[in-house]
Length: 190
Image (cartoon, rainbow, N blue to C red; front, top):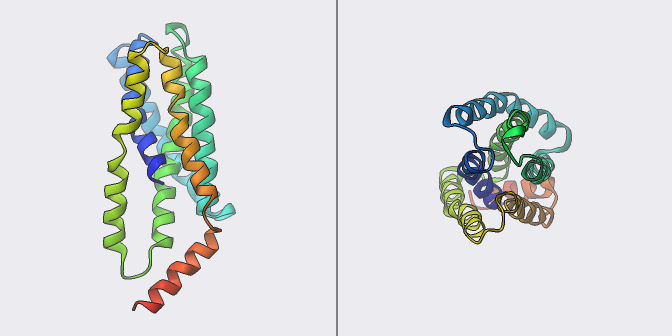
């Protein structure tokens, strides 16, 4: 979950830079895009609830990571200049849904896999690990941009963090086994 959080948290800074430099949007237009993101984050939390109920929180997480990956790559190659600035709001809506989905889903996963009695300790570790890598995607974006790789490639490189997160999640045991292990751990150590 940490790689996914690093990528999504970095996306705000990277997205603002992309809209300013690549799409030549004004600060007011960029602000409007982020209002769209925030507005659509609310129904994104409901989307998280629906998917978590249907396919469990871990699989919901995987679907959300996949959507982020596809959307970031498509956006980086479609949004190339000022003439596509209206499409930015369409992508902002998708990113907003994905943000709301991500944060609600993260909490659902952590709440169900943390052993009882260790909640504050484990949430502290989660907060630390979430913040520990947030600089890395921004650094990669900046280094690629400074090497003149093209801003769309620099933005698309953010997909690496999503793909890595998805691969790591696929290496995990089934969600039900993880929850069962947390329950056994809590019983044994109580």
